[in-house]
Length: 413
Image (cartoon, rainbow, N blue to C red; front, top):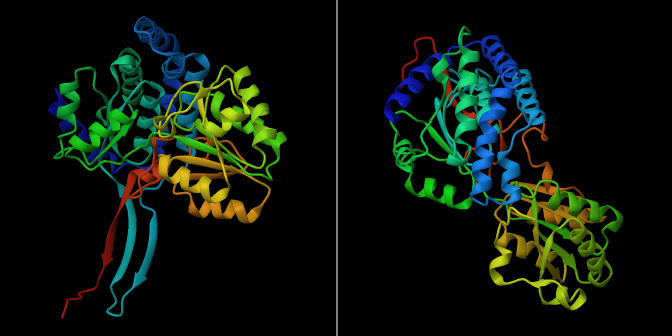
């Protein structure tokens, strides 16, 4: 089954590379319309997935990632339309120069080819990824998790039906409809057909794909994100930022998991922010100094500092200042998103320069690390590695380049 899918995707990718911008945009808009027109069918499939997850005891924050409603389907459609409105990266000339021998050399954007995506929980990834791959001239093979199988299969069918009658080959979008892990293991070895593999999910999934794949991997990362409150922070703004970063959607990778507070304001600020976190049903786990100030919270252990909770849990630590905050984040963070709250430009600049993360913030919530929020239309994932792409990845990040060399009979001497 997997080889057949891969063969079809490879053939589709050749046709995709030839398509005009108008042809791709027309297909994307038809896909968006189809999602809206088939919302009831999609929601029925999703309901089966959600009920099965509840029966397994999946926690609420992860159910939030799995569940769809009319608003989320409308958002999926809206993001496809936003992707269609983005500039087409394919064929863009990044640079061009003329050599002394008269050769004209240009570096031009081209598609990657076939993109394989292995992901968990979120059925919206199916539509987002398909749209981004089409816009960037690629074919895509989508293998979602077993928890969202019904949703992913139906969304895939709706998108493929929408492509029929357009210039985009139907097989440019394919959803693997088997939850069998052996199928996924076979997929990640299809180096002959798949040009790049993107794992999107929890730490175990990403680790497995990186270690076992025979295909080049763009690694999306887990989000052990931090907010550091400096001694001169505007505390009236700090608490809403912390609550938003932790509580708006705690099951997402850009949710804040740790709060660091300068020791000079800890006695003043910790009781206030912890009370507000508790109002929002957050379990607070504190270091020794935090528990001296607010005794009735759970003690944090060493393992807490490196944990991505994906839940209404937050680790809190008192630090001596900016140096300790930066060192702690670089030691325990996952190079995803981290924020400093301060009025001091120089402190903010040091934090921005020295924290080794894909996105660093000054006086803002980490929840903005998102392709749509960054104006990229949608995202195929948030990369925390340093090669090829870093941060939210959209259409331009699913391209590579080729050199185009124009001559007039030159030979090398």
